[in-house]
Image (tube, rainbow, N blue to C red; front, side):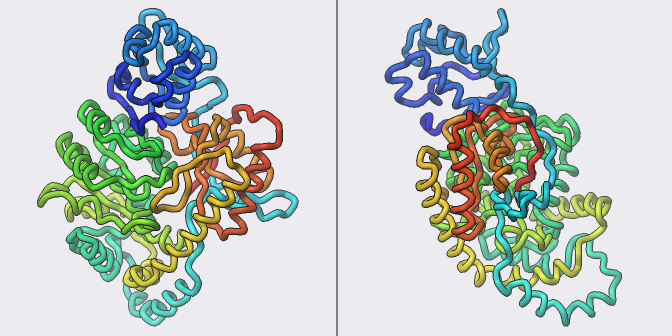
Length: 496
């Protein structure tokens, strides 16, 4: 990686020193024009230099990297020829993507996400980073809920804020994790996606500026596109966040809202260190930015202790601008549509008003079933995590066996690997894999700028080891079949 640094600027310009800091050490040691062009192309594809950003002038970059101007001129010429930059007299050289990398369309749930084929092969779903329900857990929860349902059924059944007992259970768990919380600070939602959509609907208007990590959760990006906000990015590399550049971006853009996944980030799996969390809290508070924290994967801690809520690190009164949401989808089952928002009591009341205008209330039955699952989470989670460790190890072995040329960084938690294919063929490979019965989340679905991360695949380890191995075997066959992988025609793909 290029020193693990990332960049996103507000004025759409990157300085020569910033760009030089992103380049690999081997390029700086012996700068050649082809190596320099390849390194800049990789930074663009990886989202670490955003699209439509002006690159440094040739003379300035030459001085910064210790190369001749002819070397930089040659690199820029190669990038222009391959379509990764464009130049216009008097306005400089700007990053872009070559033809064939089309904008990401709206997602669609295709065939139930099974990846099945007409010949009856059920297919292998590697697009959804979630597991089936733990054996027996739902049956036990329904058995607990059944005798309690008749009492609730005597009421009209409308609980816009959520069932009081479930709100208390969620609040109590935040308190046990180090963030004192009252039930009136909790809104129960129909999953985490609804939670995020409600927050965006309340806080943002068309044209507002919002920043997210890049890459980030694909369905969150779709919600932001639907809200017609202007999206900027805080880039995340395999090495994590560059908080100095993130702070600069926040100061210069002063966004209305910042959306982050600090706990086993989706899709990279990175875990934000405590000192960076403190800096993010301070930076967003200073700019008056709402900090929206996605904790959907926070409990999937495989190699480290589960982190405390980000808001718990703030000094007293220093987290009033933080909104946290999560759900039971990853710890239990995505089919149980129960999530929550934790914020100030006034904010919860305002969010509930938005929620009522959309669906009035949540399912009482789902919430009643969720109550024993929430209260028993600490008891049930260890077995879930043990299963995921086994499956993660199985996926790693399969990748080493079938695709040794691919690379990845083992995450300390989360549900997937962010795999580097070594060449920008992710969309084309996902289409070819679909023909082989494998549904996979191509890298571009996770990028703020359409067409970036074309050299990446997100591969979850949420299936049994034998299905993971077969899925990787089919992916490898699609990758190695000897036919060049051209840029794919854009088609909608749904990932979770």
